[in-house]
Image 1 (tube, rainbow over the protein chains, first blue to last red):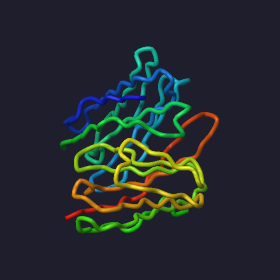
Image 2 (cartoon, each protein chain N blue to C red):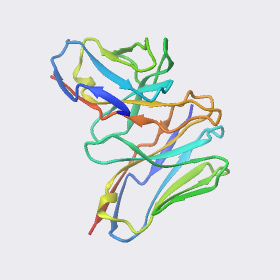
Image 3 (cartoon, one colour):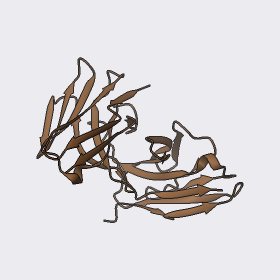
Image 4 (tube, rainbow over the protein chains, first blue to last red):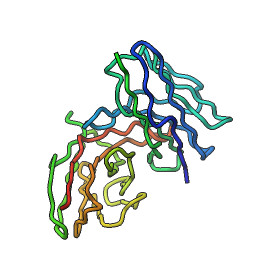
Length: 113
Length: 115
C-alpha cells in the first residue's frame, strides 16, 4: 500500500520568513495530494491540493509543487504569520482507493514574532 | 449546510463500557471515514464506507464496529472500552468523482477518555 513520509517533524520560523515542508510517497499510481492544516484542538482543514496532471499550484501565500518522477511534493508558505502556527499534514491517494488518504506524520510549524 | 457533525464532543468511559460515536453529514457524500488521532500523532483510519450498506476495515479496526444504513449517518461503535482507545475521533466525508479522490471534510471530533 501507499506510504507517505513527511519532513521535518517540527519547523520554527521567524515571522515573515518562508516555510517548506516536504513529503515523499511510494505508490506511483497516486494522483491526488492534499495538504491539511490542524490548529490546536481543532479539526484538520484542507488548505490546498494538487492532482498529478499539474506540477504546481498557488493560492495567495501558499503553494504546492509536485515532482512525479521523484515521487515527492512540497508545501511552501511565504511571508509567514503567527496564525500559520499549526500542524500540517500531507496526504496521497490513488484512484482505486475509494477516496482513502494516506497521511504523513505531520509537521508542527511555529512562527515566532 | 452543517457539513459533518459529531456527537458527543467529550466522553469519559470506564474500562469495559461501550458507546456509540455519532457522525452525520448533509452534503450527500457517498464516502465516509472514521479516524483516530492520539495525542501529538497523525491520523489513523479505523473504518470507511463507500455507500449505504458498504463498509470496510481501515488500518486500526480492532475494538470497533461500524454500520451505514443511510447516506447521512455513519456511527462508530466501541465495545468493551480499553485505555488504549483513549483518543480523539474524527469522522470525515468526501464525494467520489471520475477524477479520483477529493477533499475530505472533517467533523469537529469526539474526545474520548477511557479510565
